[in-house]
Image (tube, rainbow, N blue to C red; front, side, top):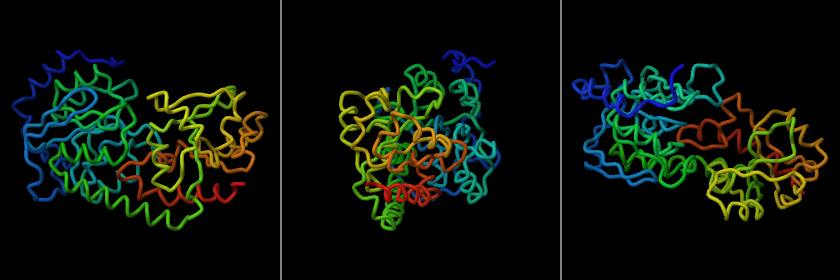
Length: 348
């Protein structure tokens, strides 16, 4: 079995062996070239330096071969018409088992590009596979990179990590950081503006969302409901509620104020702490929802008692809707907002 960690020296050796070919055009690797669909605009000047939580990264020249690791980071370059040479295999919401979410597949087809190399991150980042793609830059602004991960990846190519905390980079900042690293800041701002317009158009259809306090529970273990997990205000799922006109319950805000963690747990014996919650969102199917409603403690939550609960299946692409990414928003936003609106209609 592949080791979860590859020694820095081994990666360096692999990169050195590839040095002569590192500057080759992406077209040599089929249609997964970084320039596919790219505009001819000059863009930003280089070198560019990006500060982040794990260090400072200087990119000396405009990248031609772009690799991404961890969840959804491929979506920014793809939104800019740049096809990565390698990206993480989808491990959540992949309904057909091909490792690529449908909006990514659609974009690749639009760009007439083949699927990039897919990095299997089941046991952590596959550093060898990343090195084999010979990237000029590695994008991971929305990620859980450790300092060790960052050091090892940096021996392959310059790495853009998260700005503050792991798995907590808002979608706008992810776009800003990656587009800056690619020399396409202005185009990145246009991507943000387009998404904001889509969100405004959809939320205008559902005025009942405005002001409803909403919490997002983490995955449920229906065999043990003695505790309930929830995402804090540091998590992008909770932050996205604000984009939709929803609000943060005081209970969640208070619990989040004393931590930088993206999720916490609460004993269900103290479930009345969440009586200020109008809508509950969580991962699961209808059976999970029925289990919550039948539980003697969880059923006492006002939102659960009202039936103001939205369950999202992790087995389908729609389950990723709650965690906004540059390309998933337009694909699933209307469905997600509609489910939230139906829950809002039941608030008492």
